[in-house]
Amino acid sequence: MKINLPNTIPVFPLSGIIFFPKTNLPLNIFEPRYLALVNDCTKTNKYMGMVQAKKNSSDVYSIGCLGKITEHKKMKDGRLLVNLTGITRFEIKSEINNNKIYREFDVSYKKFSQDLQKENMAIKKIEKISAKIKSFFRKNGLLLNWDEFEKLDQDQKINTLAMIAPISNEEKQTILESVNIDSKTKVLAEIIEFYLYEKSTSSITLQ
Image 1 (cartoon, rainbow, N blue to C red):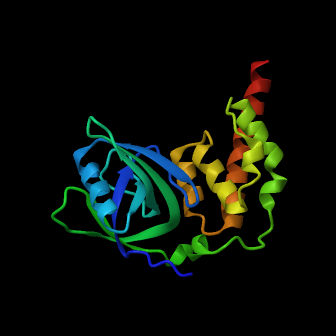
Image 2: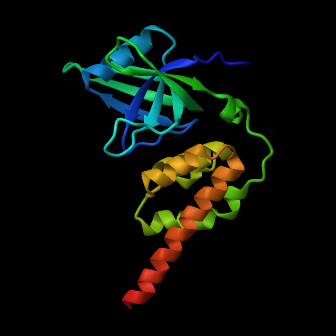
Image 3: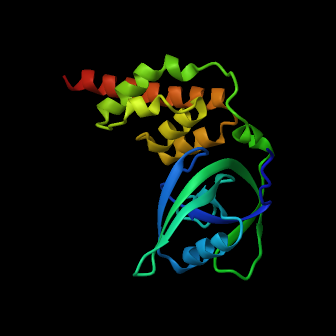
């Protein structure tokens, strides 16, 4: 079934968080402009975009992720607790001049049409690097329920790992911008291998 996605979306620019399709992102909303954004979304189609803000600038990256508000709860102090479920990545075309206190953009989903398709029979490269992924997480003191993780489809696995891995925001953004599952897996593997190599080299040097 084809999903009708809006071409103009409200966007929440956020530093330090990279949001991926098929993942869930809990948000604690308290700024007036984003309270207004979420309130407006809940009255319409519940779609909003998340995009990484660039450092020391009002600029944002051109690739972000569209999410749908699947849960929201208003707190006594006025905050909104929201769960955002990732739908598909988008490419920003232009910013809309509006009279609202939050930002809106014209976007295109064409480049990332695979996000809306069911999992294909792509080579499951993630299985080949699973040992390195587990080693990387273990060495960084991160716990993950691997039994539950194995129940996810391949795209969900890559997106989840990219979202929670202790790597830089720039590296996460690179994975986000990788068009298909094979390219995302390749980039993630290269990043993890670099960190493992760097850690092993520093360990040898310190001995």
